Length: 115
Length: 112
Image (cartoon, rainbow over the protein chains, first blue to last red):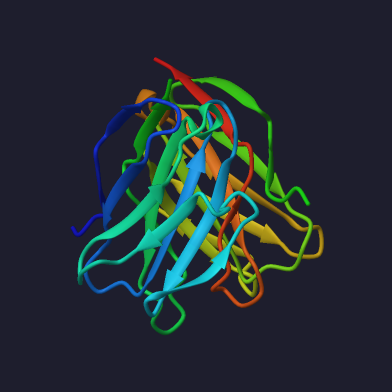
């Protein structure tokens, strides 16, 4: 069964460094998302992406964040200058988006630790 | 606004018993989805119920939706130790294309 994959599974970085989190959505899906989950807290929406552009973003998704679909398969989240409070689990999700299909399928996540 | 609040926050049951988790939300929705998360792992999609549906089944899972009360419940029948996980409800707004809004989750422990 197709699944969303994410790399790396764990990333440790120093405050102020740039990180890129990578995701490969399910191949025929059209909508892509990033969410994050700070330890012990809710899963929070960051950004959605459709037709090669951001379709919606949350207040969390400030100028330090950017997303890109550099080729036909990868979907990346870049944090330009990491802060301690960016430490969280980051989940990528994708959705088919055709007809009335609303299920979002999540990857296993990347645990980001900012020291 | 807070959306998708589950209760109880934690639930502990014996293997073979049924587990019921509830979710309440505040705004109009297109659909409500339930996810499972094993400790420190990813989110696994369990079931989706649309706003015009009242009940849905999938294997040992039964989901109900009451849009007048803005609430949903997830019933897991004949629970197993492997069902031990956190369960989250997530709502999608009217267009269905809006991002999911998650609740805080219910931590289910099934004791063998």
